[in-house]
Image (cartoon, rainbow, N blue to C red; front, side, top):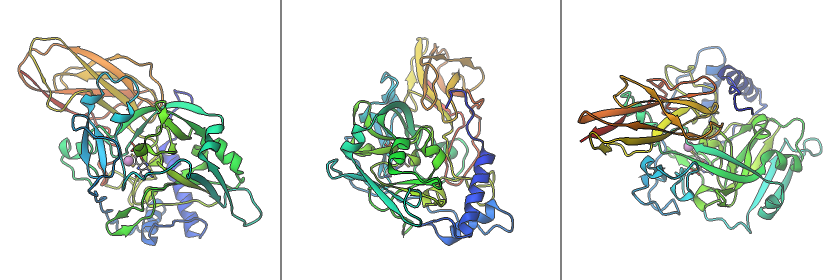
Length: 428
Ligand SMILES: Nc1nc2c(c(=O)[nH]1)N[C@H]1C(S)=C(S)[C@@H](COP(=O)(O)O)O[C@H]1N2
Ligand SMILES: [Mo]
């Protein structure tokens, strides 16, 4: 995608979704693990007549115990149940790419221990070439993938709920889900095989429409309901575009917590699309639905279509200071404030900073050449004069023309928080 391209627009996504939901109604799509009621709700919302009442999905229950393998030193991470959030102050001075040991972890259950020698990737389903009505399956081992021509790309993985706590702290709104501040993002240099190359080798049928990778981690139970293994369909067009089956992260084999031996990397899209520990990929000639593109990862709430938005694709626009919340600064001394801004819609080419709670703004100095799928680092100097509490603000603008608003549109699950974050500090 050229760096200045505008992302596919929401109306297209909505029409696409509506078409697929109708196919489901006609018995032409599969929705394993999604209740009929949920599908009917989405259908009513996308189509015409009287929408069924919307039941708010239960928030995921956090499990206890050791669900993450790597060390999580408290100066670098905040623990949220099965997940670990990176502290922004720990990123100061770490360079463009997030070191693997500082990268946030989002686990629905727990990191599985997998031996690459036993691991196989199975591609199967009605979207692979075979005889009429005949499902084919093709398998690749770890060495098979490593022998294929590789690509390397820098991209963020960011949870769709990153910044979610801002709905409560800045907007007084109650949302469900992990209360991340801004540390559910990391940028890495990923190396692997284009998913397109593997699909073509497996023998893609001209009728294929959806591709659904599934993780090898345990089945996910939410609100007493077993939703099965983590999986989410991707439209074939995206799967053939820039998706990578990644086996390296920042020059090392993928660490266990980040998907060893192989994960999917879907640049700029919501983190859930980047399935870790991928074990199989269904290639389907029918549209597919899973809980992760129906119940979860749609926008529900008064500002959104009744019954929910189309499934989320690209991440939104955000900025963060490389500072602890409540940091203190001595009055009268010159400081260099640093931070990073990013967007799923295109490179971030402008960042404005306020050190007086939003009364005055000035452009930050950009420290990276703006590129898609990753953040732009920036800095401003600041000589605080007045003692007491103040707020630091940073507002990014991307090349697709989006700017961070003051308020983010509420949605019940707190996804895609994009408002300017008020970073409270004290001058002493
Ligand atoms: N198999 C599997 N893949 C997964 C998940 C998971 O729990 N299981 N979590 C998803 C979510 S919600 C996010 S935000 C990213 C997080 O990737 P990371 O843990 O490497 O930072 O992985 C995604 N892929
Ligand atoms: Mo996520």
